[in-house]
Image 1 (cartoon, rainbow, N blue to C red):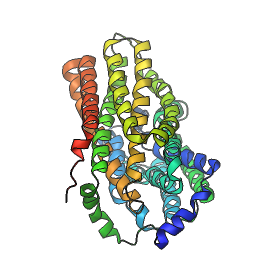
Image 2 (cartoon, rainbow, N blue to C red):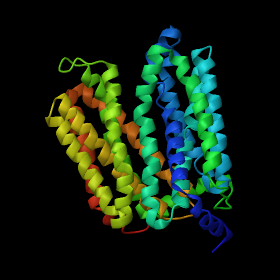
Image 3 (cartoon, rainbow, N blue to C red):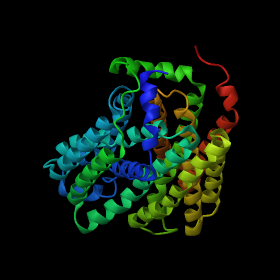
Length: 400
């Protein structure tokens, strides 16, 4: 056993319950920053009237996040992760202040790129959780932290919409800055002084991503399945506000935000899914998640009512969450010295799937209304379930 693994194993005892909850809260604080600008975009455009750059603020935030996934996540394997995580929270606070004081739309766009890239710190915390947890409890630990991530995603729009409406859009960023500092403080207290698990250079670490993809069939299968499932997930959330605004419901954007609170019920499924994966193995739980996603789209497509939407969104979020937690359980067991780079591959694949799902959903809505979106979501879930059922064939042969 090398020195990296000795130090890593020696730190596992420090992952207590309070530490784990602190990591979950910090992850939620970080990831929420990607979505704060979406419900307040109209307020931003009103202030910067005539500056068309405001329209791309949500897009460049997501682009910054994508760049952070690819360029920053690999650092988790080769630098001191506690320092890296705390440093990214400070960068997140600085980006929030820059967004809050931005005098022009162009500077707000630049701040949004930095905001998105810094928010990737949430995905630095998840591999650390996997590293600190004992193998028999890894799924439950990952599930707890991912519950924090999902809470941040689902509740961020509701919080931002309320703050923007009652106080102004800049105040949301002023609030997010001290929250980021709170995240840094929690990680300073909760995380042990983790040493790098790999002695690779940064360039070598980036080049190793292709090797890891070829070497691990389970990583390929998990990445593809989760990308397709996340495409199904984002297709719903992309179109929900438009669907609720139709004469069938005649509801505004605030109602769409409230669905985020309903969807947060799925948070409860994350730790449970992790514990089930610990006991019974994660492979079957991934299949259950894909099947629930398929069931959710059946409800959403055929039960055109508010109760149908409420039940459908809960089942959808539960299905996506238990598949995500179980897939992460699988990939983090592959190589203890490459967890951050493995997470780079997995999360980048998932993010690209989500982006594709949003684009496809817009086209499906344009040409087929809600029926088209429901068919798209059902088809994507079917593809994911089929891939999972054929996983052994997909990963039967290692690519040399």
